[in-house]
Length: 289
Length: 162
Ligand code: FES
Ligand code: FES
Image (cartoon, rainbow over all chains, first blue to last red; front, top):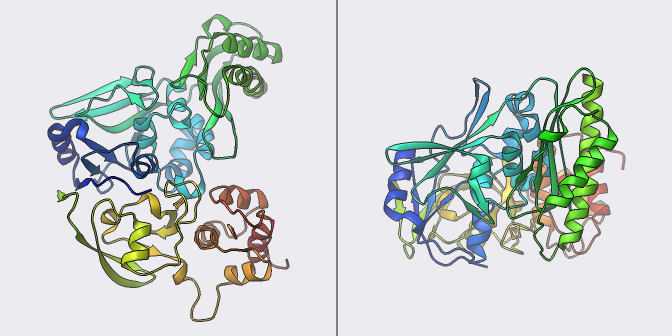
């Protein structure tokens, strides 16, 4: 379809963009790659008065590692993040997630920031950010704030970003010692939205027991979630622990229901995919410990 | 900051297949429609208009991407390659010739997009595995061929001897 008529503004600087957001508020939609917003516009699911294009704002496409955090600018394209050596070595979970994001022809343009701002519950990039305990950097006129990923996603396509704020960067905690990162998902076709996605950061200490574990689930509830797993620290990191944790996670989630899957099927995917990803991560971690 | 009103038509100039061309667009005009209706380049096809089918894929500034998810006003100054930029006269590119030999198209609706994706893909990865080719093709929908002939055509140009 064709979108409803909208006005167009092209910002040349972050200041220009946030000035316009201060004026227009919710009447403006920010376009980065446009892979999600363009589809929503064309299907007339959104009808903003003005589309604010930030693609020509210089300096928003950088990837910088400092003080245990990798900061990615709002305009970093998914394919560039995937090929970036800093991401590969410092944020391996994101590197594992990116091949599942859309397709060759969409990753070329789609951005990390756009995916986070869009907040589809099944999207991989938000899930990686939540699992790692990252943060979202938002700028408005005269102020900048950092929102932890866990507090940023509020529901389907709903975030803590206020209407006068521009998402300028994402902060990714860098890899922890002795930790293995793993990601997998089930989708109808490769590259489609995940029915269930599992992201894991698992630390195994040298005696073969579990240290720190982060288990994230995407596509299950109305936002990416992290499962509480602190109680499992100190247990032997093996296949039966993987099964127990996945079983526990499956019993605790409240799955969404849509045309792709009902709640029971989603819960079953948490059980099966969760066990598979956790067991593989534990095995790798034990080998490396 | 450049600002364009919803009903305002502005001039958009870009390099298409090596030539500077221009046309006019209001903000909501999709690049795919701009190529077809303003520039009369009907080789780029339009299926779903929301990024799913891949028919509209063209190369923009060296990257294969959806032209239905780009608005023409965003593209002032861009460099674009469409399917019309592949063959020189009657001389097909090796990829097009392989599609012909392998019967990699039936109705041809999906073909322009697949050729543009594959051209960019092979420039980055000249010797792909079959799995990599299939992964790249997952961004296209073909309702006729079942994909097998498309995969063979691509593997043939990449590795020869097919
Ligand atoms: S028409 Fe652009 S992807 Fe279908
Ligand atoms: S040849 Fe008909 S859709 Fe592909």
